[in-house]
Length: 457
Ligand code: PEP
Ligand code: MN
Image 1 (cartoon, rainbow, N blue to C red):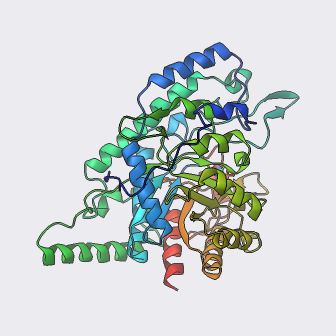
Image 2 (image 1 turned 90 degrees about the horizontal axis):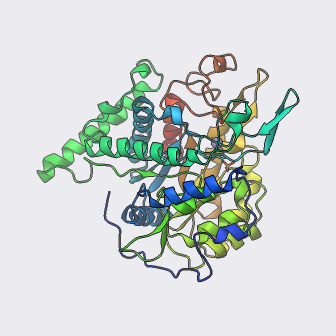
Image 3 (image 1 turned 90 degrees about the vertical axis):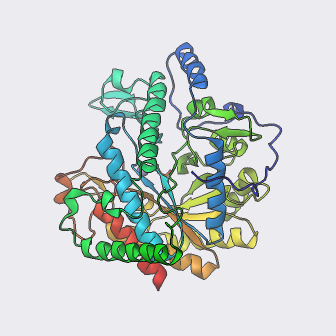
């Protein structure tokens, strides 16, 4: 990973903050652990385990995000809605990496700027839920809150929050990270060999031809540069890859919040780029309190109920010194609401002269249920929200600097539409998500192409 730029200087540490000060604020979406002693023991153990990322990488990413704020880079952030312990396999991890690399290739080629690649993985194990409990046939049990907290089966044992799952989540995250780093260091992401990223089942994809053209054009450009310069093009052999997850389970995040010898302040070393979910984004809540004191670049999901005033208050709390690269807003309004809800927020932030990276999540505002009981999203709505986002930013004089997507490298049928026009009956064939519906490989690539087409207009 690249060397951090020293121009990102320390802003001062809030004097009344500690890694545990969130504990005095209202903390939403946290499980009730039945055994406080067991929980404390696990947290002591976690505090001694090695971190998953380093402060050097975190600061390098912050610098890149600062450049994205200026329009010099574009952020691609994607992965599963929720990782599961069972899905920590070489095939699932490498397929997801392949899709993200292919999408970034399409974006680099079409946008003519470097892409920051951030996975929603290696720690995306805790989920917010709309209710604390669930009742089935007269039996009430705690809701499933992600593999880091409990298990999905509807039994009292499975649903009991188990703190030891945090240790397992740490280990699974480390294995995922290790494999991704090893693949990338070994040349898997080499731009000279985009064929490494091909997924076998895509043979007859309606998008294959367009993708092959782009690969060809990039190959020609790389060879041309190397011919005229007489040496290999730098930085094309290795690609930076960063991780992110919703930092929801604060006891876990606190245990991985560390000071390091060479950089002042506190870092969340469980991930490079944590975000606050929409349900825990209150300015006086525990999550905002925790996030304000860490030095990572951070993001906040912004839903349709947020007012301009609330947004300015959260900027004051999370980025009082207007540090470049520090704060991203991921708006997730829904195709039907973005035109109403987004412009007042963009205007308020622009008028106040505040520095944020605007990112569009076209997934979470477009979730619906089908008649046959599946939670799904329509490709047309996802595309429409993204296209509107580009137009609304252009009209407001702000810039859309990235996308946040739920996707997988597998041939699932969870979202409707796309190049193969998946229908409600198709959902039955390969619906595998236990939480939100993801774009499959082809639909994900199609989103990348849509962004490029939109930007070329
Ligand atoms: C998510 O990203 O999976 C999620 C729950 O999103 P949001 O907080 O935007 O609803
Ligand atoms: Mn989700």
